[in-house]
Amino acid sequence: MTFQKGNQLYKLILNPGRKKEYTPQQLGKGAMKYFKWIDENPLIAEKIIAGQTTETSTEPRKAGQKKSKTVKIVHPYQRINENRKRPYTLEGLCNHLGISVQTFHNYQADRAFFDVCTAIRQIIDENQFEGAATGFFNPAIIARKLGLADKKDVTTGGEKINKVTIIELPDNGRDKVAKSKISKPEE
Image 1 (tube, one colour):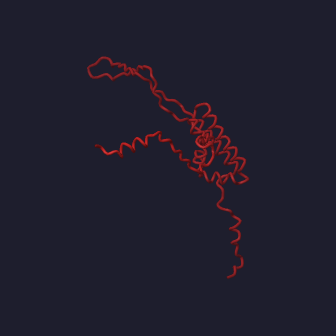
Image 2: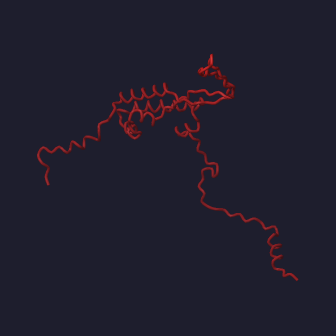
Image 3: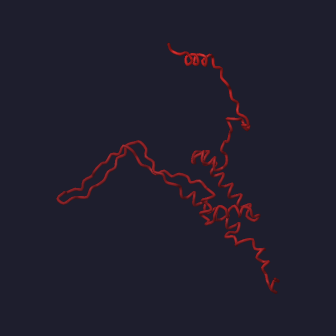
């Protein structure tokens, strides 16, 4: 079988896949938009704290009444809304950009995207580390996410267990007493 004249199948080999959705500059700008959105949209947590609060409310005037009625309600606690800082995450960035995390890793492997992807990763890591160090984020979760978990073998000192040692304890005469009770017939 021979190739037909004008066949250009070899050009398919030169195209390593589909076209990238972003240029390095667009990826950097998209990341900055994501970081800005995170900073401007904190998580809101409702917190209940001890302390009496008084709420007044006015009931509408009923037929036959001259004045509307004011009611005082005393609560033994307060509810407040507290803004909580959101961490920057690679997953959140990828969701914001509409790409998968694997696509981001593929971009990072491309020489043209290497610098911008490295800068993005550094910003995310710094945000998470500083947030954990200052108490905004859970330090244990962030340490695991950043690969900073302390992994220590406290049982074997890092050595492999190759043999099992059986330690035989002395019987202290217990076996002789037990045998003598069993072997003597009762009279």
